[in-house]
Amino acid sequence: MKALVYLAHPRPDRSEINAPMFEAARGIEGITCVDLYGEYPSFEIDVDHEQQRITEHDAIVFLHPLYWYSAPAMLKEWQDLVLEHGFAYGHAGHALDGKVTFNAVTCGAAAEAYTPEGANGAHLRDLLMPFEKTADLCRMRYLAPFALFGAGRAVEEGRDQPHLAEWRTLLKALRDDRLDIAAARAALSLNGFKAAGVAKLEAV
Image (cartoon, rainbow, N blue to C red):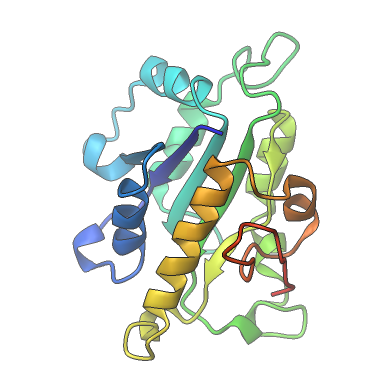
């Protein structure tokens, strides 16, 4: 499976997790990586080029910090411009049919905050529902998110390297068609699957 990772982070120079995850993805053969803020610093997205890019890949991964229960502005701009009627959706818009997509996100709060009983009142997957519904409209297959909670303390707590290792394993499993797509679509989280590439999907 040809996978494309889009990084959307306005200050990757200050990123302790997203930037290393992007670099890790760049180090994996067969994974295409695009830094949206780096490529389009003035927000002038080349729509034709982006549509060609996503047409040429089977899986589209959005790597970003969770901003206001969504993503940094560049990713919303990308969605608004690239996912055009007649290309991504609509009667004649079938360019993305069947492609896989998911969010790889970093969250400031602890995992307990992302439950119906927690401070945010919902699971992370539920908070990312606009991405899932967009994927549905585009006839894509939306997978559960891959997340790091409490990201601001991950380095000092030594959780960054295990997360990077799991990220690499996930991308390789996706690339090699070893990820159980049906299970990944039904789960709350992609975190926790085995290094062998067999999906072991856990609730957040």
